[in-house]
Length: 230
Image (cartoon, rainbow, N blue to C red; front, side, top):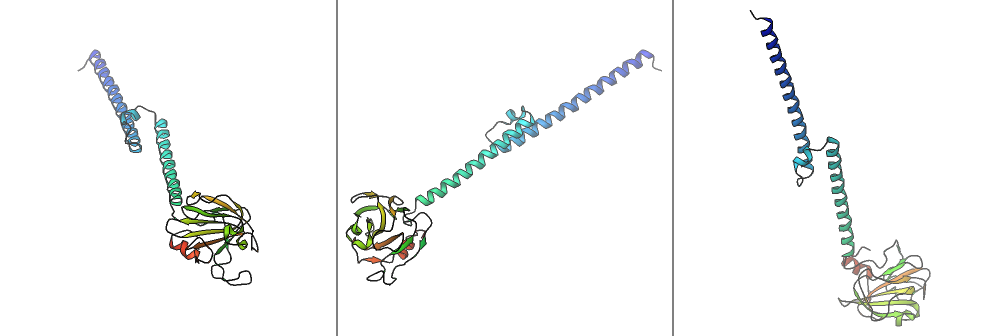
C-alpha cells in the first residue's frame, strides 16, 4: 500500500510527463507548418533558399509568391509584344499605307480618266496620310510634274530597289525626300494628296521595271509575292 508521500510523487511525475509530451507535439506541429511553407515557396522560386522562407510568416510567403507570379506574367507579356514588333519591323516589303485605306482603281482598269489602262493601284485615303517606302532603296525621282513623268501624276516620288525594281508614289500633297536619299522599309517619304489628274484624295502606287513611265507591272501581285500585307 502506497503512503501519501509516494502518491504525491507519482502524480507529479505523471503531470510532468504529460506537459513534456504536449510540448513535443506542439513543437512537431510548428516544424511541419514551417517545412510546408518552405516547400511552397521553393516551388515558386528554385533560386531562393527554403530556410529563408521557413523563417517568414505565412502572409509574407504568400505575398512573395504572388509577386513573383505577377513579375513572370509581365515578363512573358512584354516578350510577346517585343516579338510582335520584331515581326512587323523585319518585313522585307510592306504596304505603302500603314493606316486604314480602301483599294479603289486597280492595275489594268480602263476609263475616261486615263489615256491608256491604269498603270498602278490606288489607295483611297484622306489628304495628309503618311506614305511609306515599301522596301529599302534610293530615291531617283522626286518633285512636281510627276517627278518628270508628266503633270498627270502631280507630286511624285520614284525609288530604286536592290532587286532592280522601282516603285512610284504619286498625287502627293507633300514630298519629304530628295533625289539621292537612302530610305529604309517603312520610312515615311511623303504625304498623300490630290495633285495632278486625280478625282479625289488618294495614293497612286506603281511597281516598275525601270524608273520611267510605261514600264509598270501589277503592283499588288508583286507585293503579295514578297509577302507584304496588302
